[in-house]
Length: 544
Image 1 (tube, helix red, strand yellow):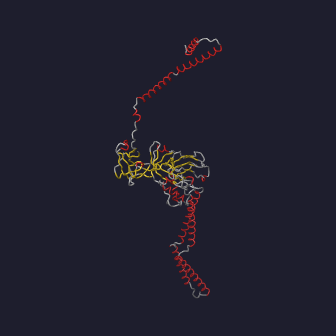
Image 2: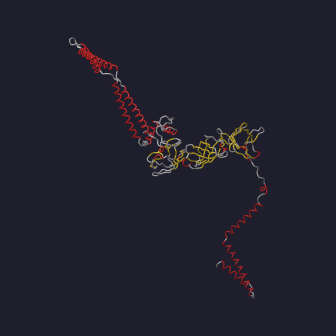
Image 3: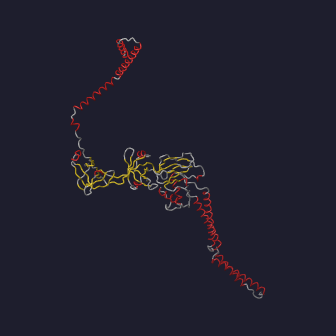
């Protein structure tokens, strides 16, 4: 039988015992009241039976509460409740020993230094600037003589320098870019002539050939027509040299004097003329043949003989006096002038054929090596805009500091910053850059001490806390909280050292030690005992 049946049964028994009332309305009212009462009794019965554990716990709690009140009232002695609390002891801290420093603390971003976009001059290519190779990967380090990129089959060579390559260097040019090239060559061990000279001379041109040989590329091709001009100039010089040789030979022959044969022939001619004259004179007609006609004829023959002798004698004299070689000399001078012109033309042709340094094949970067941060091109693409972004290979930390704190800092200060693993690492202040106005924050740039590869990867891109000591003790010193200092009657600084138990309060055994103060930092102050003894670990009073 269920609980509800039991209740209904009990209710029916109750109703059976009640007297019967004849009035039907009253009878109905009594019946309704009885049913409501039965329902209430059944509800409480269900509550008691279904929540029995809860009622048991509640009853136990009430019993415990009553028992506690009774025990506290009648068992605990009254004097235990009303007794006074113990007197408070002295507030103390131990004397510390170590390095005390005053620090400037900033937040800094870790990254690579001096990120710059790399652009390459492709105007001189005469065609599309197609990237053909040597495309670096992100993270690659570019050093002097590295090939940063290959465009249209030609290299872009990395060299140290500040000025960009803004023109092609050819023989005879001068300027600061030439000086930069020569100094860059000297830095990589290539002789380009006097590094202080700003003239692109033959030595500098020869250095271009050596430069390309170092990186395994042929030197830049000669300008169009330079090779043909050089060959023509060389031929002209050769022809001029032959002309000069022929003219000089002719002059030599003309100015060398008569030969022995010529002299002998001239002497023989004089002797023959002399004999002819004597023979003519000896043939004077004598009577009876000395007619006027015969004498006249004889005189004529003698005159002819005398003239022939005079001519022979003159010719002999001319052999000893030398020859007129003015014409030959003029021919030699003309040949030599033509040769000088040919040689000058050859020198110009040779200079035009010397190696040049195209502006699009060299990339000057400062602070080498440099790290490639981003590459904007791929092989086969046409180069447009910046080819890549490079930064210093060294890690830097850049943060901001208030102008007042910046005045405490100096380049060369040694700082520490937090590593991700919880350790500390040193860094050096390398630059302090003022803000835009007097109240603006300054920029502090630091260079960390060498990081191992794992640390370098961990800190890149992080914002770290940097601590820069701006005042520190020269070594380990004793120091106490500033609040531990009190003033003596003469204005001297003192600390109160507890030799007994600080919990004894005002009854504790203490002594005053006169100290000389030093550096104060972070609420601590350096102290040196001048009267009394003070050691590490001694307890000094900071409050009562």
